[in-house]
Image (tube, rainbow over all chains, first blue to last red; front, side):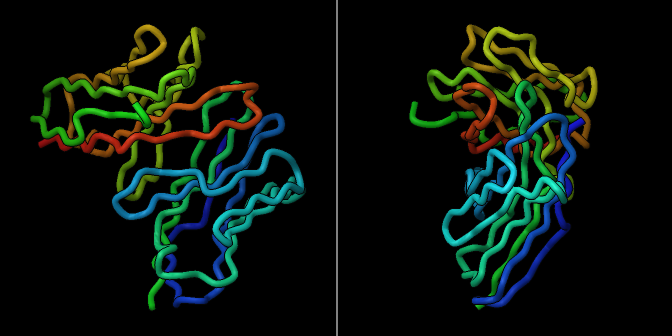
Length: 111
Length: 116
């Protein structure tokens, strides 16, 4: 079945540090991959997506590349800000299946 | 409405009581999801409705949990004989399901359930 594994948090970084949050998946067929973000006190929202191998999703300075050979979709940002503090969820869906989320990684960025 | 609406926003109940949680999806969205968010457990899939198809109930943790979606719109998640481990935030999401290649989920603010 479909599943997503992401690195456990919490992750604490200083402002302007480089961020990587690892995500790997197992899936049947050809899934689409997503990163969702939940800012404090807010609902989940889509951050970026990739729908096929080698696609790169990007938004708000975040990037993730769909790597079929390593079944990975790691989230990266070159220089984090305090406002990036949130919980990040990796997710995948295959046609006919519900969206499957990882357990979430909490990120805290300190000034 | 403009977004996914859930009610109540908070629910406190006693162990053993039944509770009903309501979700009003975005108009026109054919897919509706229920998830549960617990501390340390992340986002757990519960059930998924897509149009007139039979729902995917594979995530329901026990037979105390059930959900229905009336008229392809509003959905109710029912938890019977609540237990303390049911305490969590219950999230509803909807999407405009197209071919299944990509769908963006829109989440409600959730119902915080506390079982005493």
